[in-house]
Image (tube, rainbow, N blue to C red; front, side, top):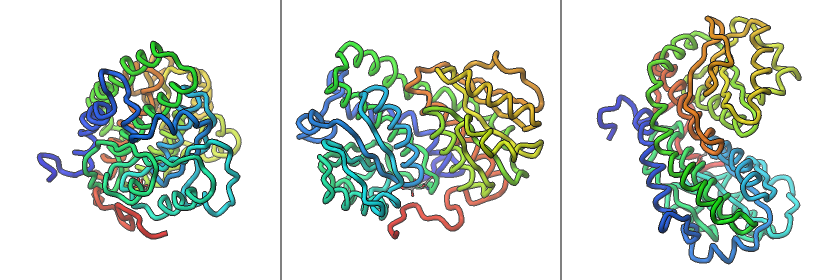
Length: 366
Ligand code: M6R
């Protein structure tokens, strides 16, 4: 049931800190990630892995894009990510000792299942499903499984499944790192100071709700929106844009900030809201410069940042202050306000939030 919430989506947004806590505690034994959270044979299999191929659809694909950054940064292993619907139609060349990873809330998405079945015949070293449904086809048909503990997700717009997938990918990246030279002290520090803080960080940004509703009010009559992010935040811009178009029916595009001047800057005028995620990470100065370009063209900026002092707030540049979090947590934490933004725009427009037109919760046909 929805309990006291008007919609499942809002309930599920609020359940994220619990979902993260449960997902992490399932993976830990004595405060350390236990390899068996991926299955009994995980240690043997992961020891031989040198590269990762991820396939997924929609929101799960965006989690995969974040996963690439995590796997390359933490485990120093090459990682490729592809839409499951495209993957099997291009005769992929399979590098030796590559783990094939599928991400899915439902575990029944036809394209993702077909990609897994294809991969199992194509020479991958092993397969892993990061999935929210224990009894699903993806879980049954893969060699390894990581079960996110998000609980049932009813709203068609995926929320808590996504953030728990991100946590699952953090865990996978750390396990691969363990087999590729990361020392136990570094791993313990990341587990303690990043992963174990995820649920608190996510909870703390829920208090931005009123401010976000105010922004939603400013978006309801717009035709188009642009989401920007850089590095690991670009997939979060993609996810923010997908959430908005899916339930508000407002056109939303997402770009890495550096691509602006290669085309989309031509769209920017006073009727174009630009929503940016700008955590104070190594690319902060880059996104800041990109946003100055938007401002100079008269765009309407909404900036989510933990460095508000670096922006001059005005009617045309509204700054939403985010908490400081470790780089590894930023994708998780910056997702929450974008989910809330899409939710409020949808509610104000009078749409069916939980059951948007033309969409199904689980896409079991190609
Ligand atoms: O169940 P899955 O994670 O495999 O579903 C994949 C997509 O269909 C799904 O994420 C879809 O994009 C959501 N409705 C997005 O909110």
